[in-house]
Amino acid sequence: MIRSAAILAAAVALVCAVGAAADSAPSPNERRAIARAIDLPRKCAKIRVSTVARQPKWASAAWQDGPGCEPFAANGVTLLKKKQREGRRARWRFVTAGSDFECAALYDEVPRRVAEDLGIDCR
Image 1 (spheres, helix red, strand yellow):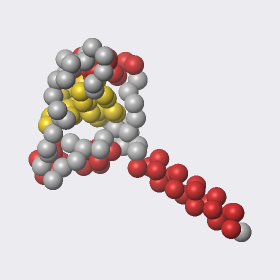
Image 2 (cartoon, helix red, strand yellow):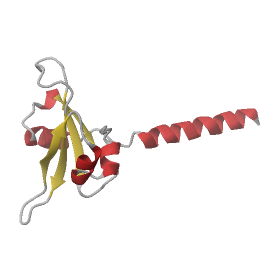
Image 3 (tube, one colour):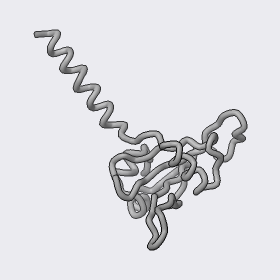
């Protein structure tokens, strides 16, 4: 009985942890397109793609230190949206960027659940 309860508690904790971190790493094609959209070297971009909205797709990109990546900015993040334009294929487009977002202004541009999924803090 105690063992079953422990296994159940561990399973619930695992499900909650997975649900809390729903964003994902980009595919190689997404990484290339997102880095190109904001003119950032792929190897220097820390990119996450939101999984809470299927259409349109949303992503965040931040500077990632590493070999060959000189510091570009302190702790800012760029938010992008994959938009379809009439008669053209969908492309990643800049939406907003910053390091200190005001919630009301942020949620005017980015759905709240997307911002939360990507770990964007606001005040």
